[in-house]
Length: 363
Image 1 (cartoon, helix red, strand yellow):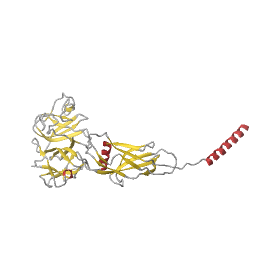
Image 2 (cartoon, rainbow, N blue to C red):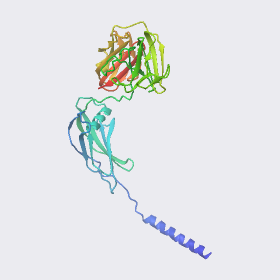
Image 3 (cartoon, rainbow, N blue to C red):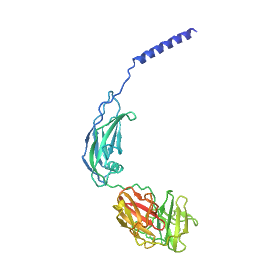
């Protein structure tokens, strides 16, 4: 019992000491001082050269954000097309109280693309720095400055695998050159393993390739009808007679179907694209009709602006096709305007019998 009383006494003393220590402890209060100020940009104007994407283009320096006690400060460098930064992009973030950042030609150009600044035109791009401590605590904003930037056009984001028909049964024949403009693409679907093509075939053989000008990746006849093989020595798929067929392909399951198809009897003397991508909805850019299949049209290497467009026949609105999907889809009569997000050079294919279209960015 004596030991128990001693333990209780010692414990009580420890509590009293602890309480006294809490009363004496100083509470540290962090208060912000001056916001960071962008002090210097390494250039007033930037003409971005696409041939040197990794070259440093702009260096940003700023003064230190101050606080009432020493703290670790992080800085975020932001860019915008407007002074209010309603639409902005984060160029970079630095920590450990670093007060300088360098950005490459590509980084600046990518930022202009996100901000929607027009290409090949000098635009003001506004910059500011945001300081903070902890997890975006006590954020402070610098003054705003700007640099005049002339961006270059960049290739659109095109994350799709195209397939092309090749062989005597098709418009392209067996001429596997990258310059063969008659190699027709299959229509892609929302399932990246499945494709289709509806069109005219001669009674002969054909295969499918992934890259125009290369036999490295091809699909031929598999072990039996309805199956595909990726072996370069595989046999040809074949059309039993001249006529219209629908080909469907599954490159994952390595299967296909090839069935007779019925297409409209109506053909057109001319077909064009029209929209803001080629000026406005008053200007037609004519497509070329296939001499192999009168329902197939193409225009290759056409430079288009970002915007929207439709296909139409005979330069009139009586017969027009549209859709809401970019790069590929099935357009319908009087459908929506087809969007195109980036100004670039494109190959465009259209089938007026089915409404299917393919738009491929090219260099």
